[in-house]
Amino acid sequence: MSNISASLVKELRDKTGAGMMDCKNALNENNGDIESSIDWLRTKGLAKAAKKSGRVASEGLIAVSSSDDFSAIIEVNSETDFVARNDIFQNVASKISSLGLMSSSIDDLKEQNIDEKDMNVESYITEMISSIGENINLRRMTRFDSSNSNVSTYIHGQVNEGLGKIGVMVNLKSDLEKQALGELGKKIAMHIAATNPLSISVENIPSDVLERERNILIEEARESGKPEEIIEKMIDGRLKKFYQESVLLEQTYVIDGESKISSVLQSLGSPVEIIEFVRYELGEGIEKASDEDFASEVDSMAVSYTHLTLPTKA
Image 1 (spheres, one colour):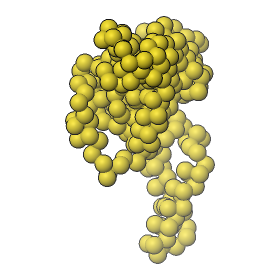
Image 2 (cartoon, one colour):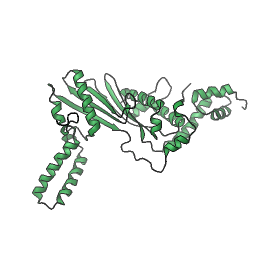
Image 3 (tube, one colour):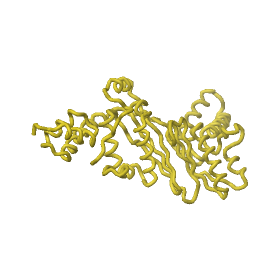
Image 4 (cartoon, one colour):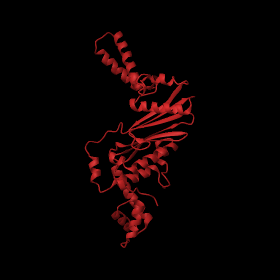
């Protein structure tokens, strides 16, 4: 079918966000049928997305959401901070984090439908990859149940509400009045963002981490040439310092610079228990590529990210 009208091309472009020539080619390939052309474009988009999905995405955003019964935190990665600053990317990150409130795992989250679109989160991210031209990855998610406790959240380096570079959730349980517990929780979350503890208590330190640390301290102490009984005392002292630096309850409270966290939890008239916490830092553990300048690549593309329209379903 060679006689494709401009209005038909515009209709397909409005529905998909694809380029004008891509839309015209799709309509030609599918005899002017809009729905078949949408599927054709999505197939082509998926092919492009697969190619881009192998590239390193270490920028992006941490996003948190809360309801009466749950709080959720997610990390969504992009290749460049340029895309992460875009309103569309930020809105999507917020929407996905709110869907995390209804999701028991990241796989469950990927299957959630986003908005009223007939498209789940995983498919929608794939559409974004094709439209934006960068790899985008929903990397991880954690959800806390607050139906019988109090979850406080904190975002450090906030770029918009609930969005930033470091995110923390901490779950507290106490007979304290809810507002007081919430205020304490916010401060504890800020402390966790600043200190990045390994565990809540000494007993919660992973055994492999503790064994590795102890072995390092033993080797360091033995190099001093001191007797074994002195070495044991040296190791005990250094382990104590390690606990003070790495264990939440043993750390010095950054808010006042004096008290131990464990003392703060006992000082408010009713004991407070830290049930769990999680701290996400953007890009931690991701090895960034050094052989490609993704920012330059994005700048060279004929796309205005401030006027992006993501593909939508009919």
